[in-house]
Length: 91
Image (cartoon, rainbow, N blue to C red; front, side, top):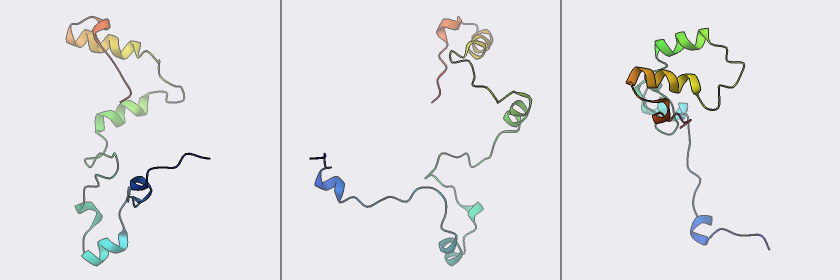
């Protein structure tokens, strides 16, 4: 017999995630640029120009160093600490 979720979980309604309902916005006379969408992980201010410049000059065809060695080294140098005191994560 396969595992079944608890009844309370089974009765949950699916949540709405991401994006706007354009028809609803038009009915309410709201422009999409007047809304901050907290249902997705986006930056309402857009991508910072400095980041765009860096991305344009980097080779993105390879995964970065899994230990972030160069990044940890630079952060340590800027902050005057040992590389072993710098933690870089993907979150």
